Amino acid sequence: MSRVGKRPIAMPQGVEVFIKESNIIVKGPKGELSESILHGIIVKEEDRNLILSYYNEETDKKKENMSAFHGLYRSLIANMVTGVSSGFEKILLIEGIGYKAGVSGNTLNMSLGFSHPINYQIPEGITIEADKKGTLIVRGINKQKVGQVAADIKNYKKVEPYKGKGIRYKDEIVRRKVGKAGAK
Image (cartoon, rainbow, N blue to C red):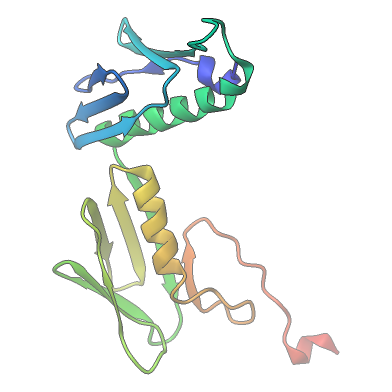
């Protein structure tokens, strides 16, 4: 049995879970998320905790190769519960002279040293805040979507190792290289 999958998922106040045959719907103060579950994974609610287990329908015994999916679905459901209760956020820093970003409506407008501005359409369910200091905050209830949007924005201008210009995560460490003068 998966070590991750064995742990129960605690349900905070204000979060409701609806378990249907192969679907789980999680509703909370920030919104609603749903996920389809692989056949053989069982989700039960006991005393404001969700407990996951698995079985093999043919032999009705526990099946060892379902262990990986057991842990995966436990993590997915735990992320859904966290997302609808408190949400997720990624903080990006834009560094460089003349590099800036602003949000207008449903579009993120960035000037990153190219000959043209970059206009990124913000997906539904995601909010982006930009300030004058070059900080972007990507927020949402779906952890996968928040991470993907942050990665897409970061890929527009990767951090170069000599001056450190580009877009990086707040907690990312960029290894700086020594230029020609330092190589002697």
